[in-house]
Amino acid sequence: MPDFDTYELDAHEEVYIKCDKKTGLQSIICVHNSSNGPALGGCRFISYDSSQNALVDALKLSRSMSFKAVLAGVPYGGGKAVILKPEQPFDRQLLFKSFGNFVNQLGGRYITTMDSGMVTKDLEIISNQTSYLTGLGIDGNPAPYTAEGVIRGIEAALNFKYGTSKMSGIHIAIQGVGNVGFFLGKKAYERGAKLTICDYDPLMVNKCLKEFTASVVSPNDIYSIECDVFAPCGLGGTINPETISKLKATIIAGSANNQLSDDTVSEIIKKRNILYAPDYVINAGGLIHVAGLYSNMLKSQIESKIAAIYGTLMEIFISSERLGKSTNAVADEIASSYFQNSEA
Ligand code: NAD
Image (cartoon, protein in one colour):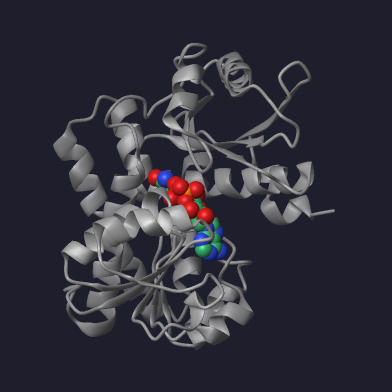
């Protein structure tokens, strides 16, 4: 049984669970903190080993969303939904309709959007049941914006480590080339980076090879590639003591949420002199985009907030060096101080 306290169950404002026997929907919505605005975050639609693991995932992700929104300067709180992908055959239309009703029942306390495992059609079905959603339409996919933010983050890390943010000739190993990893590879390639990619799904790898040149390795071999930047863009949790010991990269900077297996890992990364760009800071581009769509922000405002990820990370890197703390600890302290001040 997971220890829910570790994931700050009591720090969450609200946790909702819906089980709809008719459609097979089993879903959890977590609202971590709404002092910055209504909770906004995507809905994951993946298989979980157990409902406990689904709850832990939702708790960790919604907490990250609160921190992400604060550091990205968007007026929203942290929330996240998960739907446990049914093991039995199911009607996708009815399942997402039921989820849309669930979101609507919360009256705007939680605003949903797409996350891993969902497709645009699912969001369209949800939109027939509730207006508390964002990311719909031709420009709705947050992945290119998340990738743009990751590019800005890699540039900041390169500048901090090597005194230049130029990506030309830099070798980046991308773990997972789904929605975000694909756009990250494309953008990095356009900037002259050398790429190594991997994915469990060969279709994703082939899609990349049609757009840009990259070496391909197996998911097991990606850690030990001789490269400058390791970019985790899969499902998270892949940075642990064992994988760190294999890394040749001097920078970890990717889109995955909850990249570190636990908080102690950030100290190991620091001891190995690897520069880690905290996940919820570097991957905020998608949130900035969907929050901007929901608030009718100008395109130029969205772009400048995404570009600002560079400066935010640079400040974290500098403070981390000055204070002798891990980058993760510094980012957490900045975000936590915001919530402490708003409670005071
Ligand atoms: P996705 O499901 O489209 O793609 C993930 C890909 O990674 C899949 O193709 C999967 O097969 C592959 N994968 C997973 N684990 C892997 C591993 N260990 N080795 C190799 N391949 C692996 O998801 P996405 O939308 O691209 O998101 C990727 C990550 O970034 C997730 O952690 C997500 O929560 C996070 N994120 C995404 C966005 C966004 O805009 N989509 C925004 C912020 C954070």
